[in-house]
Length: 401
Image (cartoon, rainbow, N blue to C red; front, side, top):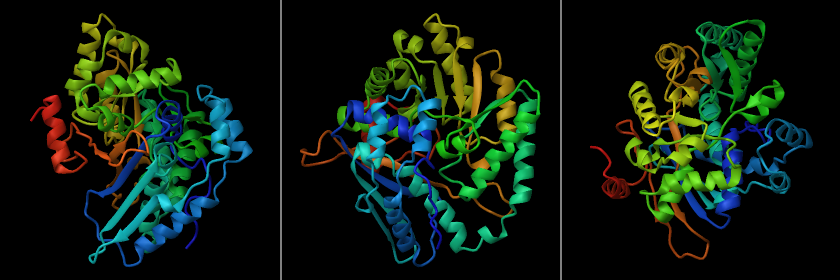
């Protein structure tokens, strides 16, 4: 079996930007992640062993001078000390435990110092996704020439509609080649067209470097989840925004607000934060309803929402993005992060419905126990965490039924 991950920066930018904030604010924090397959897939025999082998091969990855130079040039908000950290960083297979039950269902746990294991999540998901198509024989039927044409057509439609859009598809891509093909096709299409829209870039740092694009990303739900596990969910968004601003001083100012729903975030989103942060990212719930709430909140703080960016990333495809762009234009500065629809859209192929979520945390390694945490989604059925923790957090913040 070939090695699936071959480059240190074949990863989403938000893992690196969060890593900076974790080292800066929570250097001794320990965390535990768990793998969730929402389709309850039974994987082929031996699948877990191959995931373990691929994970072990991550230990061979070292960031190159070329990758460092690119990130220094295109990510000026990342402090220079972080590149020394990355040059000394080595993956460790001991952080990851993989197994299958008797029916083939996959179990993966990642545990260790947050500043280290934070760089495991996206790579593990990309391994599981690509490996599944290899071992089931589906990869052999993927027509990459046709896929490039489809990707160009998607970009053309979005550009003609005036959409600002980017690729967010690393985690559940059909393969590295699929994401590379999609990004290359969309970048070439955008460069050849004159339109009101724009292909902004990709979340994948290595592919941004390869295709001379802007790497994009800020943070994920895990940042707020970990803080909530340590200090409680009521003020987790406030503490997360404060920690983020301590590290980035106003840069990377798009906040992912929906870890515990709109209502508790809105209480935490005071005027100073609303002015400091460039905008918000919508990742669950009804996109129009969420935008209406965002606009109302900004107006209540005497801020014109049309001056703020809203990034939509909730299960988008081209049609939804174009429709939403028409609704949002003039009300905010809309942009769209599109993932699986860009990097796993082959005829007859069902994308993996997989995630890895942070479920437990302790403030330092000296604590004898972990504290459970969870994520409460605006989408029904997508809460993550054990049932008791979910119900406890819902009660603490009066989460809507």
